[in-house]
Length: 629
Ligand code: AGP
Image 1: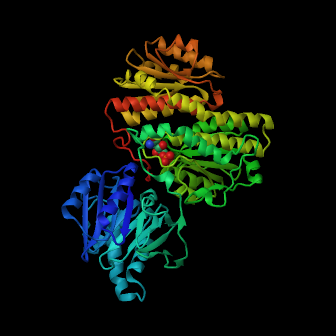
Image 2: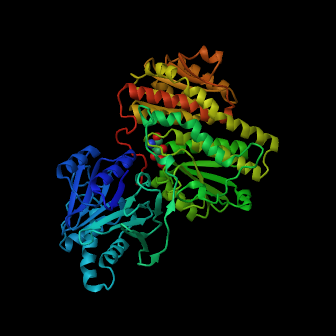
């Protein structure tokens, strides 16, 4: 979704801002803009559409300014056009603001400002901010002994309701950029005589590894010499920059046609890294506690739940959206199977407005690749407010999620650029196995030999994934036969039901083919009505408790002439008798099968979407992290 960047230093700001904005493209956006201070004058350039449109404007105007802020906007209030693109200025045209998040009381503020004589030109909720600062600045210049602009910003932001991050420049102070964070994410990067700003630290990591993260309700005054931090009352906050590991955040396709394909192929490594962090050896107890250096992460990291707390968990409540929600559904099967603790999985956006039935014996787990998904964060904070213990599973230790819980498992996937989640899904599911085994160890729920066996099985999974990835060419040929389909059904039972949902989501996200996932047993209760010879049905069927029943459900589809596709185990002769196409997977314990069965489905979606010429990495209408409810 929206992205904020900034630069201040000896170089020309425009190319740096553009380069930062390029790093944020993956988040999804529909317009972009910059504000620079050119020879003492504020200049705003912005354009709807891709960054290339903004780049054309910048090439035309060739600003030489060395200070500026930039933004990629994903429209929420007002259509994606030039006018609504950020930055937004005040009536004097001297203050510019870029904004992520939502100003919930913008309509009241807009009415107040308009009545006071301000002219607001956009339909956004953002524009009120520049006008509020304008008003406060006028007053502060007369009243304040201190720094008028800083105090004006403090006063203005106190009037805002909602969660937001802001970047602000004023032509009166071309030597500074201001950054404001309130329940959002914003980082300052410190270089040698230059400073950077970004809402996603990925944009800054290309220039420096020294980062300062703004915490809740903080303002940073950024100059070429560093950043001074204040709370909203102007109290100085002493915080040093942290040196971070830049490697996992290098954005590169590494020779792959698309990020998506690269990320599908990265799964064995991200799984190994994620599990390896917590499981040293199957013989040794799992360790989820924080490591001294924060695991090289920029942000919180580690699980601080005490043994007493772990033993007191009576129920687990998982909140997440989209793919992360399906990882959570797999987590339910895993935790219930290994720990025998009842687990509910909630679509995070469905939690709002409901009676919270949680207490201090409930562990609420938020699962979010980005750690920034507004629906997930809202559900999670409601659970915390109801007294539940809380824990996050995220790929971003520097995210908002990491700020609001002391218990964080981090998936070691590196940056996931493609909008469609792949490697984060398997790494999240891997975290659930690790967590379940950790709880089982702590609560002595299984004999040590069984825990040892399960750990061993889990650690073998990346090698099985590699075998599937090595069959990529066969999967490609098998997949594109179905590229002309208009509808596709995915079904699985038990622990592979979430995989069916994920398979369907992947296909529709990147190929735009309508697809639905079902619990295989549900087919006969309705969805079977849509089946005919034109509808491919993908069945996930692995040996185990639900094998026979799943095959029966597949027979029901076959009897309706559906095109039959399966993800099935090598050498499964019964599957061969039912399905037209089989994506074969190696033998795997049913309990661990989601980590394997999902791979052919990811590849199938990728190959179909690529065959159809779709924008696989940045599908239409989608954003990588959805930061509005
Ligand atoms: C996955 O392919 C989607 N892009 C989407 O469903 C995503 O999983 C969802 O928006 C949640 O994102 P998060 O993991 O960053 O919270």
